[in-house]
Image (cartoon, rainbow, N blue to C red; front, side, top):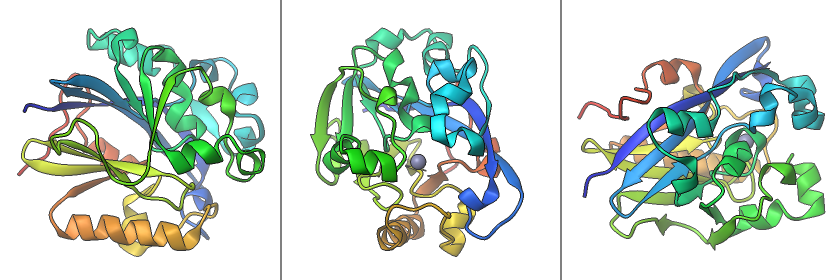
Length: 256
Ligand SMILES: [Zn+2]
C-alpha cells in the first residue's frame, strides 16, 4: 500500500490572536490548509478551505464572522486550482473528508461536485440544526451542495487498511474529527481545529470560542498521548509549523 499526501495552502486569514489563544492580544496571520490523499483505492481531500467567492466578496461570504477575519486569498489558491496544478481534476475526487463544517474547512466542497462527503454524524446533525447553526457559527452555504453524504460515528478506517483513519476530536465543534495518515513510515495526525497552534497542545491553551471546553481538553489530551506515542501532530492553523510542512507538488513527509 502506497499512500501519498499533498498539502496545499488555500489562502491565509488574519484574526485576533485571542480567537486562537484565550487572553492573548494582537493579531495573527494563519494558513488555511487542505490536503489531497492519494490511495490506490481512491482519492480524498481532507478539508477544502474557503469558498472561491471569498476571493472577491469576503464580507458577504463570511457574514457575521467578517469583522474578525481579514482574508488573503487569491485566484489560483482555491482547492480546485490547487488540484489542477497537480494535474488532478477536482471532478474526480472520490471523497471529501471534512474535519468540521466551518467556513475555512469546507468552503471548497462545492468545487468537488462528485465527491462523497465523509463526516461525523454529530457534526452533520449540528450543522443542520437552527440553534446550533447560530451558536457554533455554521453557514449551510458552505456545505449544502447536494453531495452524497456518509456519516460516521467515532473512529473510522477510511480505506480499510489502517492508512487513513478518522479520529473523533470533538470540542471545537460537536463532531470535529482529525485525520491520521500513515506516510513515510510515520503516523501523521492532521489535527485541524482540535488544535489551532502548537501552543494549544503544549500548554492546553484553549481559544476564546469553544463549543465544549471539557471535550476540547479531552481531545487535546488524546492528541498529546498520540504525540507521546510517536505520532506527528500537525496543528490546524500554526504559521510556524506550516513553514516546515512540505507543500505540493512535493509530497508530505516527515523524517523517521
Ligand atoms: Zn473551526
